[in-house]
Amino acid sequence: MARPSDGSAPPVDVDEYRRAAGRFASGVCVVSTRLRGHDHAITLSSFASVSLDPVLVLVCVHADARFYDAVEETGTWGLSVLAARARPAATWLATPGRPVVDQLARVPHRRGPLTGAALLEESVATMECATEAEHPAGTHVVLVGRVLGVSLAPEDERPLLHHRGAYAEL
Image (cartoon, rainbow, N blue to C red):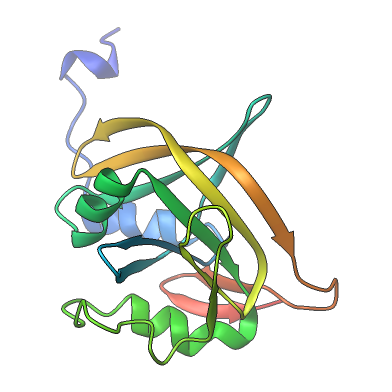
């Protein structure tokens, strides 16, 4: 039997893959960093916990994104796990071509005390991270971050979800 890694498997239909991946319900996050006085932020449909000792998380960002260039230079970033009421912020920060200057002007946020990264107020949890490793993966880069600090919203705050290409709530 041929092994799939030897190139003998038929190519995967990208549209079918997107539909399949879209059936995975996930939380919605914003990842941010601050470089030369400018905030850089993007919306992501997930992050992953990697390790508890040391405490590590990972996010995947497009290798050609302005955000990746900024976080590669700063080496630190904030992760905001969004609350349901943050849908407008998630939509705005997922908009391609938005201006780099003042992109967080309309998004309530505070500065992380450890990294200076913007942490969104409308979040169920936030983390501040320092990049521990970067791994190229196709069109993206997997950023592994050491968690420097965590903050939690009240328990009754509901998370924003992403499922089948749309936002949803619990």
